[in-house]
Length: 136
Length: 139
Image 1 (cartoon, rainbow over the protein chains, first blue to last red):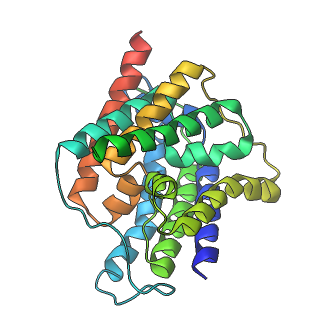
Image 2 (cartoon, chains in turn cyan, brown):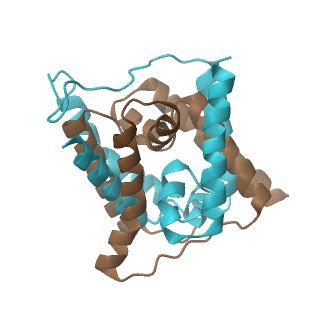
């Protein structure tokens, strides 16, 4: 069941990014262009996603078990450190350059355009390089 | 500031659909959706590798299902500069791995749990993203 849920969640998430047009880098760059011609759509996407999902995180916080797994498994890291700020800054720089973040980049592979492929390959190289750096 | 190309209805509707995916993955599988985490863990760890793979495949199927139901053309406008895409891809890969999340992991799953760490991360990448676009527009 876990696997069916994983696949289904991925499909639904991909549909959501398509409906909201967040797979279009022009929409992301429009959102980040707050001092110019601003497109606030991304804020509405986050608001929509949060308003439905957030209550569930809190309802299930002290709950025993998810439906198809032994336990909830996610990092509850509360550390506020340099890594968080440096990493998020580097990410913000890349996001602002191309208008792509990991979700939309992977979803846009479905459109079979070369630019998405280049971005996703270099993003995976980036994951790998970051691991080498952090495990040093 | 001028407001342009604003699509609040499809943005909000898409957000609700994204939220639904987050709820399913959390309540049924007990996991949080963060695309950078799922993608990078697929690459680097054996744990949940098949689940992570299926989730990523699902992401790519998403727009195909959308097209089947709506017959809409999906048009995106993306840079075709190899250098820009490669630098951006590397920065996004390294940055999300070091910072422990991206727009989905910090911006939705983290903020949804009222995690201070994720709020700080989201504010940081948004500010740097805004500055990057500002500088790009000047140059």
